[in-house]
Length: 464
View 1 (cartoon, one colour):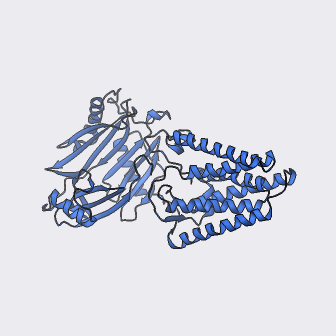
View 2 (tube, rainbow, N blue to C red):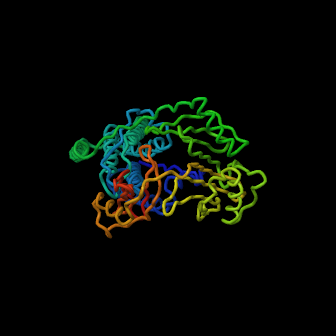
């Protein structure tokens, strides 16, 4: 239903609700509102010729409360038919988030005005629940509507309809505006609704794959040794900071991170190898206070990429001299449109092979650090490469069954990576084949293929 898009760490987290939901697609919102109002007016004038003006108003509002949710919930689908619907057995949790609460409010008008227009509460409730079921089914199966099908949406929408119906029934008991619609009308509506119910049932039985939602589990606290390792790395990078309440986050593949909140951000270290340390501070750009780390004797006003490089290099020469020696440094703006700051990156190559070492330092205009990623790994001993780029592409395209020249290739990455505990040389390749992104890793020594994946991409102008 209404998909509330969470902001990234470099987006303004105080956006108004409408802008957060519609991601600046205000033209669509204006069109949807216009169509909703016009539909209500047309239905009002048609109904006014047969019923009282009061009932005609209710019919018009009922029509608007049908068109509005239908337009908003089919907006900007990714165009990818997943044929899946997530089923969450924890029904109560559907109402705890903003999205669930919005869904309830979105369908209250339907239940209310359907009841006031027909003066048949159970008919209004049944039609509303069928309406929401049709929407969820379309979201899982119709290309131009396709969004995330979720039982939480169906539950919250149905509750919204029932809440509106209840309010409408109470109003009808005290304010009479004519007689209920005749049994002949409701009988014809039932006959029209039965094929829809059957169609939805058949689609769910034969096409849609219900997927049980994975319930979140409690993240365990880090051990004393793990918390100490994180604080040692944190103190080395930022001597004035200390982390409490560290957590152990298991990735399920034998690796984990130790993570903890710090003032204005978070810090984490990979475990058990302790190879990579990451820290993030909220940028001053967002107006939530100054949390970025001031480098003693180094931080100063930064107005260009060269200024950012100079500040970051002075910090790195003291904190991570291992990253500077024999490395290449590059600088890029964090956001090309907003003056958030610059990312300064150090990488090292052995010939054409990218080594695993990395150091990333994000500097904001105040000259303070807002992000740090430090991966201290000595250049590993690698096997002899035997698969060149041309052969790697041939292996990749043969595995994915895509014809050479018929898809859009991304720039290949030739790098050293650890696989199954051993350092290998990989070709990391990907192509865009229509609306599908296909990717894989080809071993540059034996030509084996690993980490195969394909991902459906949104059509141009659409949001996933």
